[in-house]
Length: 195
Image (tube, rainbow, N blue to C red):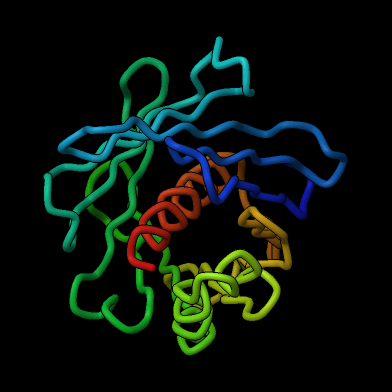
């Protein structure tokens, strides 16, 4: 993948959808969340045609407070997951990136939680809510267990859509990159639900 990656989603879509492109504008993946599922289920496709599924993200329980979200390839094999830390994530987003089991490999922390709170509050004002992407720009940092920053996700200005950019800060192997991308995608969908 050529960085930076850009994640776009329409604010007024019935089913949440995310388009991910690389620095050249090439499609990295397309995400479509299933509607009306008691347990979270997110399909990740190679592109918008939805002909070839890249992977699936599934929650391990109905209530998402401290739920685990597992990443499965086309063969149904797990290659990682993400877990929101319940009480720690109430005011400031805090997620743990996991391996195939439950071993923590990295953390995603919100760099400035007040930016997200302000962004959410402005989004609730009827007219200003349409322009919420122009005011505040939350940032999230993915760091390995040694505390070394690896990726940064930043919300960018956009009209009538959500736009996030992922910057690569240190070298990573392809499996780490894919696991981290799936972690960010899951986090974005969960944080949207929280406001």
